[in-house]
Length: 357
Image 1 (cartoon, rainbow, N blue to C red):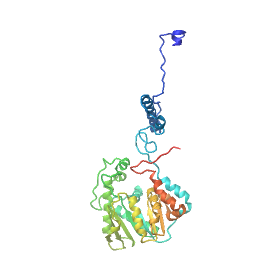
Image 2 (image 1 turned 180 degrees about the vertical axis):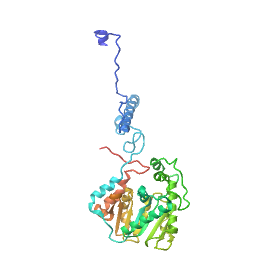
Image 3 (image 1 turned 120 degrees about the horizontal axis):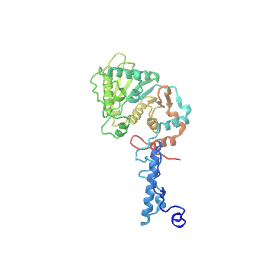
Image 4 (image 1 turned 180 degrees about the horizontal axis):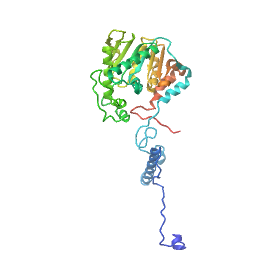
């Protein structure tokens, strides 16, 4: 006003330069990997502007309001768009291992029972090891189980299977792992059915995995032979025990004590391990899932065996962890708190708890 009307330093009709004040306007930021965080900041600023306007006509304690996150969802529990935080849960087991470096062992002290996560074993097969038919696949997996039983001196092997039901609380997470709408469902009627060329795509569909695992178990019940071991296999809610011999068909019988409606193999592995601990002095759980390791440690006092171990890792990083020794070193109070701590890392349908320091 002064320069245009009083001093006439600037022509009255000269264009006015726009003042881009960002007082209550979300600032523009370049798209980065932290785009969600930028969106959250913009939301906070807009909400704060509205609060100031409303505060002129209503009694609002801004100090109290500002003690809470000004966003649609809680910052530690979800991203700006409301999606869940995912956390690398395996880090917890790595920390536990670092606290107990002497707990890595070569083998157990006595004969053992080996509890195997079925899908972890199948997914570990390299592409060149996948045979052409499902009958050959069943034989390959059985040879792997017998080989591991010899390596770890196991007289009992449990082949524990997930249950794929629809609808499932895990449905959202499974859909994230891959679109299954165009995956062809395969009916496995006999051992000569060909394995699809796109093996990984085939495994994305729960119905295909369920059909494959059911066929493998039924095939073993009729034809399995090998070293004399007890093979426990699960099918949906039931569990059967196969007694293998070198040249005779397996002897098959149901095990009522292992009947369960657990959908996840994770919890079913623990159930089988507890059952095996009643008969064997050493139990080995074969799984790469950190959930299984934490649950086994948290419930270690429920096992009746003298030694509980976890076979984890992949390929050259495969290692055997003496969970009994870990439990003794960490102490009972720490072990009991592990499951509660692990809950903060989230799961397939619950967000992890994130804190920025």
